[in-house]
Amino acid sequence: MADESLAFHRRDPIKSSVGNVAANRRRQNAVTVGKERRESLVRAKRLCRVGISGDADADVSLDSEMMIDEEQSILEAQTSSAVEGLKSAVAYQGKGAMQKRVSALRDLRRLLSKSEFPPVEAALKAGAIPILVQCLSFGSQDEQLLEAAWCLTNIAAGKPEETEALLPALPLLIAHLGEKSSLSVAEQCAWALGNVAGEGEKLRSVLLSQGALLPLARMMLPNKGSTVRTSAWALSNLIKGPDPKAATELIRIDGMLDAIVRHLKKADDELATEVAWVVVYLSALSNVATSMLVKNDVLQLLVDRLATSNSLQLLIPVLRSLGNLVAGDSHTIYAVLVPGHDITDSVIIVLVKCLRSEHRVLKKEAAWVLSNIAASSVEHKRLINSSEAVPLLLRLLSTAPFDIRKEVAYVLGNLCVAPTEGDGKPNLILEHLVSLVSGGCLPGFIDLVRSADTEAARVGLQFIELVLRGMPNGEGPKLVEREDGIDAMERFQFHENEDLRNMANGLVDKYFGEDYGLDE
Image 1 (cartoon, helix red, strand yellow):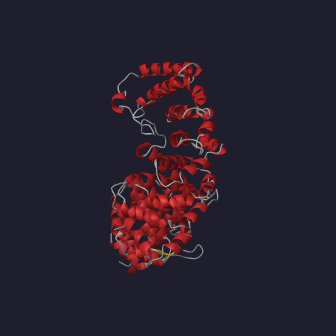
Image 2 (cartoon, rainbow, N blue to C red):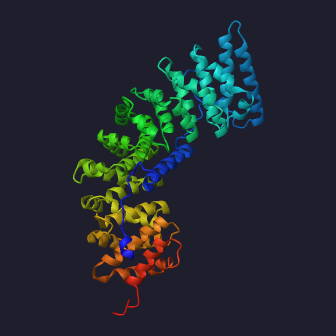
Image 3 (cartoon, rainbow, N blue to C red):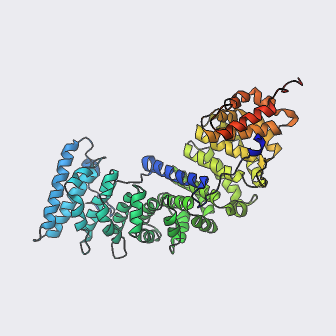
């Protein structure tokens, strides 16, 4: 009974169907890495302290201006006063009215830029949003628009309810993304919108319904400049799902695919990082985007970046994109990653590089990509088995953190079974199984059986079945017994998970029943 359900499966590709577990997993992973990015790498909501235009006034003595130790209450009082000053300046219609407004906006912006925790709540209570929206009105001077958008950017970098307070400003921020706006104003508005989109699905939906996608996409089309980088970052926040519609719409915008290819090929690491995050969400959410990216050699560009860059901020989204493309389109493995082709060898080499990294995200993602490749043809399995990846994987299975060990187990397990038709038990690739067991992998799989994670336990049981069934000269049961595998399986005797209970009990009954050991 146990044999019928034991099979290593390819790490399922992304599908659009709601019920597809693998699709949900990849989408959830996209969100998870997005949170890592926000919290420790490149925050999804960014406080703007240095002016976009780079002019001396916007950038004035930032270090001396930073109020690290100042009492928050004093800062809040100053902010409330600054908002009142801005209201008076906007109401003033006499000589020098524009400069008075700009000066008042600059005072508020500086207060919202000084602290690690800007006094956003005080600004909102004082009525900052309506007056800032008024300052965004068309026909205003660029300097006024820039300062107003900058204030809104830092308010949007606050708490969720503070970000949501920008709702009245969104139509004007989107409108100022257009071609009639100066680049500095458009970029600052894109930054504000990126912070809003980074807050969550609700505000992303509002932005999409108000038409933010197309003007942000057009800002990403030029060849270089911080405007391209900011718009790419904002777009990655805007399309990150879970609804795949925006990702599909984005890839279909004229010039977008060409821009992605061009930036990945030629851009510096900083811009390439933001573009790679766009590719992460495109490939995680949209089958249409995945197919278009693969057909336009994006896979090769990602491999080239992995091979040549040592920037962790870049390597994480590039590797995640590569993994999504490999998992999301079977065409990739069977028609692009062909054993013997240069790109296939290059993919294995860069994945080995990532397995050697000290960073756990790179190791985990590299193992996930390898598990998909290892789940395809026998030729792919042999390519991995003969590469430098296997010694690294064997070491990681016994030494790495749990989440990495689980991904590694999928790679090693998939190397040992040949593709089968139907739901029958997998055909063994005996030489791979013997080689990996001789390399010491069995204790690592038995440790997974002992874990509380049902997915990991299932992988461990599946590998034990291969060992019990396939090792030459009936060695399998003795090897499993020697590593306390019987004890590990017996913990499932009354387990609440019926599938795991039947698998484990079936293996114990079949291979360690009443007659076990009598021939000795």
